[in-house]
Length: 450
Ligand code: SAM
Image 1 (tube, rainbow, N blue to C red):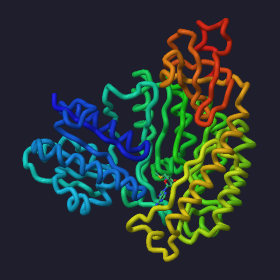
Image 2 (image 1 turned 60 degrees about the vertical axis):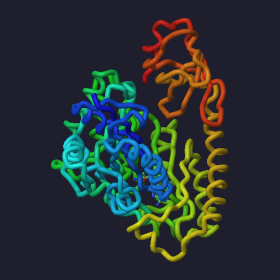
Image 3 (image 1 turned 180 degrees about the vertical axis):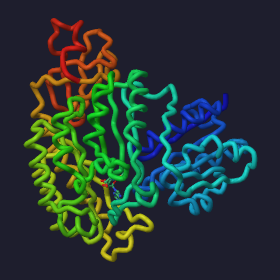
């Protein structure tokens, strides 16, 4: 067997793509190694969403240059979003890279590697390709939880975002193909699936006949073995009452919604081309909370978008408090080549972005801590997915609302079980708990809905 070392940057979709690549290359007799110096093939699966992500890849390539010099037979490849967006720059700054390919070419990775071996010339493959569902997975990945891409691409054209350029137009996989993939995962022991799409709640509108995410959730709900269904990322523009009701009514769909707001200012939202206002977003939140009172909400926010004033930023801070998010991801605006916002004149200085970033993190942390404290004293079903890093006597798992919980297993192996845990303490990044219903411990896995 030859050895493959894979380095993945960026989003869950990249993690999913990396698993497919490892699975496909296994068919070409490549097995995974953790050690770059042991590898015959090193692939970097890259992200272009912010400049910082690209900088990390270039510095990694700088380190790999020495390995390549010592072992000229080593094949180095760059795949994913940077391959699509920055192929020229990659060739210029790292001419020792043998292979550059975008996500549409993943299905042909075996053939591309063979071409490099045969010709020892750089192979470039960065155009659009047909939509292919690849289900290959390496044996080493997490069996309990899996990502499943249900659609590729994005057609939203938010003015800050490169995704439409890097991942192409929006295309949904057929429901049958997705269901078949998840059946296979469930048969191999998977309990929780996360359905992925750049705008996952636009799922199915491009199919004939058209369908939607709510219908897909019902189909996935029927798959035996799957206990929890998550989905991300939703866009407020495409959020429907039907989907909100599905979160309430489809039993395995968890009470957690990631709904990127990006900014709390209508002026900024318009310049971002997001297609909704803060008022509309708040109406949606009210409907969600009324329909699913226990739901946990998380969001993405960008600080320092071109033209963002102190007043605009104050409106974003206010929205974090008004919505009451359980988790907030804050990003400093990064100029991305080819996007409309990159050429807007009123770019915000870095120090202002940095200040807004820390202010927002501080407010979001305080709001999230308040939300966590409300969980103290409650008994919640926890899907156990590992051992606590700090204490091997403790298990770690997640609530349906996506909170990490650590608790003493009292010596039992509960991996893969859903157990009732009483939340005893809310910490900044996790919850502490203790097993509930101790008397009935042998029946624990069956005690609560997942
Ligand atoms: N497609 C999703 C959407 O539009 O809501 C999210 C995709 S992106 C992988 C994740 C987050 O990165 C976005 O929600 C946004 O907050 C952030 N992001 C995207 N482009 C950015 C940029 N140019 N600068 C800073 N943050 C950015």
